Length: 420
Image (cartoon, rainbow, N blue to C red):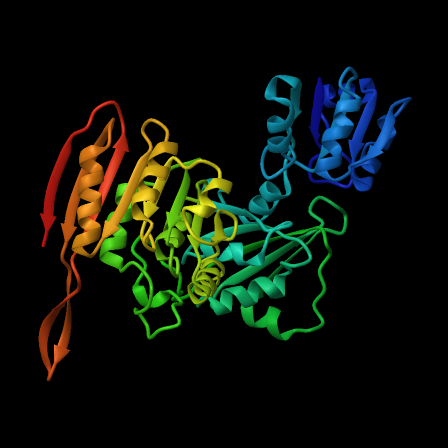
């Protein structure tokens, strides 16, 4: 059995009687040097080990599989702590958790923020770009940081995203005698070069401003970097993209392939609105790849959008099997792509594809008619956008797009409709 013990927010561990007994009874106690120091008064004959990297910790736990092990955590081990990793590695049955107040809770209580009203974000060991997906006006962000996400850097992200009116609180050494909580504007953090902060801190942001981040699905086309004038370039346009998002309906733990991702408009929105899905965007064109990478960083989907450089179907063999697939471009390999992606889909898996040319449409129709164990839904979207000509309103039609959605089941049915 492994006891995972939260130490609380204090310079001296705040432990229940059960947690104290677990430490005294453990054969080995694992924690950082700071954490071990907070429970030093409880040590007797236990072996003390400083916490190694997680890859090494897994091996270490194997060496003590038959002994009582204690692992120290900062606050709540199951809220952005080591607990989630341990559950995946050894299983919940082998773990006994002793939670305590975390720095996240302490910061919220000092500022009078209800925990259910804030978004907690860990940038520890993660790219600063991740914060961009969380910027929403009137939102409080509670951020666990590292050396790359210090307060001035967070303030710069606020400014760059159109939230320069935000307020930031830096909560240092919570629970220690030297505890300090300071409030700053974005300008103060960017312009005062003499400000210093203890490494042990939490930053809280009250996000305010007009902002440039979308608040709802259907990003405006001009927001995407394409290497072309605003709204142009190799992206799926908003009206069609919204329908594709609806057909794919990204869910928790989905693995989605976006084949022929172009500059990434579909992949970006899939990853943005469902952070617990993993999106693999496959593209081979150098300029589009560059735009795809820039859009990934711009919208902060750096954790769950993985860019695959190369051509499908060759690159698909190295990817984890998908339960949902979108084919936006096939580069002349459509028939093989349809067969290969359909074969690897599980029951209830979904294949969505778009067609503009009559030849491509005919290939999809033939495939949907021949495939076994699938339900097919297809629709044609004809979108005309309003614009002015000589001061008068006119509607300019885009090319019609036909969408196909085939769900892998035990029977095949077909429904068709036209949206004009």
